[in-house]
Amino acid sequence: MLGNSPRISSFLEHYGIVVIVVAMMAFLYASRPDVFMSLANLTNIIKQNATLALLALGMFVVIVTAGIDLSVGSVMALGMMCLAVTAKAGVPWPIVILIGPLVGITAGLVNGLGLTVLRLPHPFIMTLGTLNIARGLSSLITEGAPVSGLGREVRYLGQANYDFGFFPPPTGLPASLFVVGISAVGMWFFLNRTSMGRHIFAIGGNPHAARVSGINVDRVLVYVYAISGFFAGLGGLLLAGRTDSGFPLAGQNAELDAIAAVIIGGASFFGGRGTVLGVMAGVLIMGLMRNGLNLNNVSPFWQQILIGLVIIAAVYIDVLRRHAAVRR
Amino acid sequence: MTDRTGPAAEPLLEARGVKKYFGAITALNGVSFHVAPGEALGVVGDNGAGKSTLMKVLSGLYTPSEGELYFAGSPVKFHSPRDARKMGIEMVYQDFALAGNMPIYENIYLGREPGRKFAGLTIIDRDLARRMAAEHLDKLKIHVKSIDQNVEELSGGQRQAVAIARATAFDAKVVIMDEPTAALAIKEVGKVLDLIKSLKEHGVAVIIISHRMDDIFYCCDRVMALYQGANFADAPLKDTNRNEVIGWIMGTKGHTQSFAHDKVQH
Image (cartoon, rainbow over all chains, first blue to last red):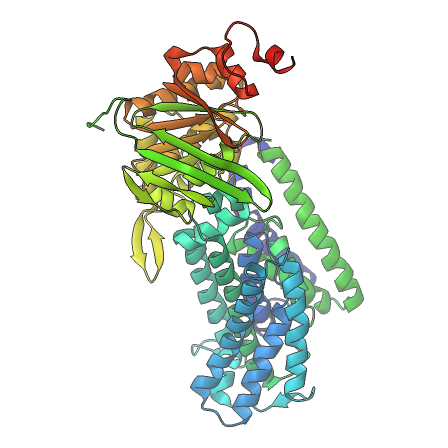
């Protein structure tokens, strides 16, 4: 068996998820060689999943602390609406592009303070509340009407494409890919190389240990939810750029997709475990699966069923692996 | 570790008239306490006698409702374990309080990571942390397969050793241990007790809460008993014996030959 060689099992432990992504790509290429590997399709996959990738990065930090942030989809919509309305009102673009992330950070601070100051028993409750509040606010701003026509600069991060004089337009490397890439590397550095990143993992592993080690757990949790809100707002900026609009119903159920991507990527729902690489792979697995099923004309209803099965299978594999590895 | 001081020295950590209320419950009712550098003090008492509450007051986890703490003769107030740790007071918890999902070396320096400060964060110098952890474990004669092992992969005794290593990583003056042997396999108990003895020899004041008379009589210099949230008895180990100490736990004094148990019931 594979598990007998420590080197192979250690490789699979760390990079097994990447192997799955590559296998999926190979399978999709085999099923639709003409379309899947076309630059237009690959560019599309990246653009469509950039927002999910940002939401998943934010969700990941929260899940590492054994928390959950149900509000990210609504907060993304709220950020998107706020920036769309201000863009239409003629506010200069350098301010407009800050509004999405700032709205996100504010919502995240509300989540974090609600959790730690009001001492609500579980983040599920606080963020379920802000899910509804943020969604209601996004609709309230324009009485439910979408806003479109945001201006070139505001759209830049969500829309720009670099062809590097090499890719035939409209293909190329989207700016959103770089936003996601920088975010992922930044997140990796923060979580693995800084004290607060390690404290976040310690809180997920054993909050009591973190507290008696002198870590201000409440303060770290407020930062964690603010980070999640920031990425929701940044996701809103990208989505607004891609669609050239703000619509109040954007990102419905996006929080569930983000949770699914994090869990498929191997993070533990009980906190303290997971990698940024895994989260990015989880996003790609969901994106590739949707893309592949679309290319092969599978109905969206079946897509939903399959994603459900993949979530269950991914966590079951994790259960088996941990059962074999961890000493009780 | 050159300035060794005998058990007879000035108290290093002292509490006077400490009271602690939790709502209507009085957990500590005017307890006084002292421990000297290089002294190993055993604290005994029945469940609910206030041992753990007193230790949590001393380690900064609880603030006393009334009474004062003194460190090296001057009054101190601890608002969190962080304050107590700054003075060199460390606690080893009964459940070890380690993050199982993290490697040994990270647990040892959790909350005090070495590295460069930048914008309120510490960018951790992992090589330095590893090297410091390896040297520190060597000094304590603790052997592990690798300092990169996650704590959840360790046995109870190894976890206890890591918890003690964390408590002593930064020049600890006082180490408080809550039931240090309760969660260990029998063959691991001796190692941990020897570790406690070696801390004492390095001039550290060690406070041990234990139900096991064997532990107390193996490594302590003095034993103090609490009963119903108050001081009950206090004596150098050489002036007492197991039966008498067991009697104190039960709340009885003045007999040494028969079990205290019998006395309570008449």
